[in-house]
Image: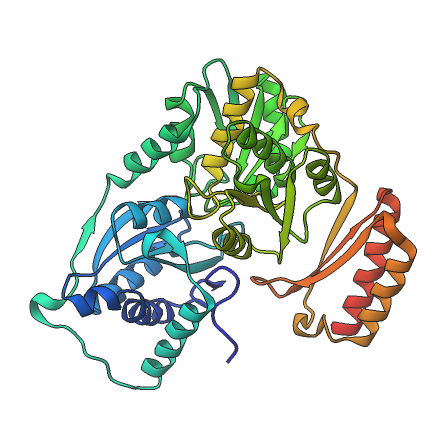
Length: 452
């Protein structure tokens, strides 16, 4: 059996890969690892549990709550809320751990279990390994001390979590959003109530699409992975701009008033300049990943802002930020972390801060995003291949070397295995989109042939 934890928790097809038994067992193990401080000092450990609207989240939530309570952990169920809301509440309520049930931008049949440590922080690899080790021990039949009587955990509905999180978001804003008309695409996901409420409380006129979750329609042709409906709605309603979230609302992409996409790199550029102006961009540095567009790097250099690049994944961005004390970081995909106000990527917070910048400057989003020019970048997902061999295949290495010689200094190539899906991502950046497409398709064919 391979490692259960991927780059963002444990994911798989619900009730096939991710079963109720697995969710329960992992929760017991997580309680033993993440709540051990409370157990040792005699206080009652507490966990915050939330989920996105997927139908499978209902039975998986029940399994997680059962596992935690059976291990003596009191559970606060916050219901359907974004991942960053569960992280915020875990910290704000002083809970020992949080659990979020979501597969983020993945399609509805998938689901995931994501554990959150004290303070609302992502788990280190070491903590994940400890949880997995204890889970495997219990699975093999090793007994553990089960509380009985008054020692078992109690389960409480914490409906106040919604208002507490929305109030936090609005309080962060440097100015109100009065006069702005905004279209919000909620991906029929976890922010379907939160995001419209926060924007409305801040003063914006709100139009929503993709905000009617039924448990089956999450990410279905909408949200941050399908921007076409948002682009059409922004133009149709004459809105100033639009915001799109994914299923668990830890990411944010935007659309300007003409229907043009504004990606995570552009959002980072806008917020970096705003934060520097306000004296909040510590060390005049922003953290991105190796997928950051070359145009973003050029723009930051021109503006006198340093770009630090990490491996792909918001956890690696966050690690760099925490280690060096940086205030802002994120990914092209729309995961943006503003560390003074959130412990993880927060799509609603990002959208609100972007809107606040538009309102404060009186400039259009297109004008603000024009601080950087995106170089053409083509990404191809090559599915059903042995992604573990992408870094060791001689055929793939030779093809990459040939592509790099062809591009010279005018572009770059990046191949990486997905941390959450069985695929290899082929990214090519070039001055000309046709050249990028030709090289990317050629590399994708080699990956399919060599690793399929």
